[in-house]
Length: 323
Picture: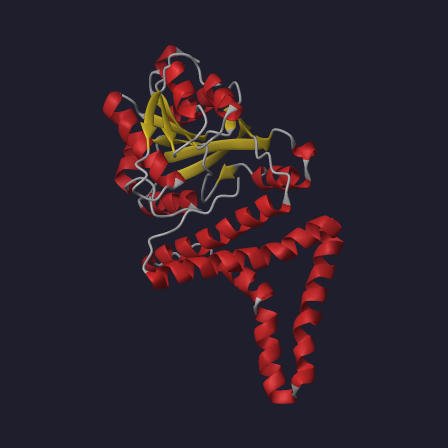
């Protein structure tokens, strides 16, 4: 990468107990690049390792709730305080490794396309063959290139746009990137996905419980982001919430209404609808794919209910980890 380009950007990496994955992450950053690593109370040697390779380290205050959004904000704040000359910040999750050409490609794009606030590329899974859950992640990352509504956790962002939008919403625990990008677009900025390799992600997901908790976290995020964005006229995740609720508790609600009108025999409506939906998904995605898509709607609904319970109880949010 040309020195002029490299001098225009810095990296904010975030993580919690990433171990060797963090080593690969930081090791994939070009030499001489300003790096801030933000740690969320790791109990391994993540902090010591980051310092040993010259990264500036921010250890999040445990008295406030953790979130990836909060970590990125505090990382960007430290990066710009130490390097006010920077124009761009590359955010990366600590379980990801940069592809060799990505930082140069992304910097070049933002240098030549001033109307774009953020750019991302193709994230792929390190070991999709290792488990069915890794395969699901790899398929999830395979999104189409071109102008997009949102980027994920790995993205290069123009710092002037980041500041104007107020950064990420630190209270959002999942779906913080689409919410942030929605505010960017509301200010006239655009977001682009390049058709080039960006990062290699290491989900290391091998158990149903990990996948279930990830889906619960997604449901929580759907409800939280929908609640925040519905007040500004462009609500996000309404369709996802409707699908989750509609295919989990919706059939039971319908069955109860029909039972009140036609008698208890109508309660069979719920299992019949669930069986029909599972059969449809199985025909399209196979038995394993259909099973997880079907079960995922219950997990997402449970996550949305957890968000609703937290709101009623007056809690800001509660962390939901799946690793």
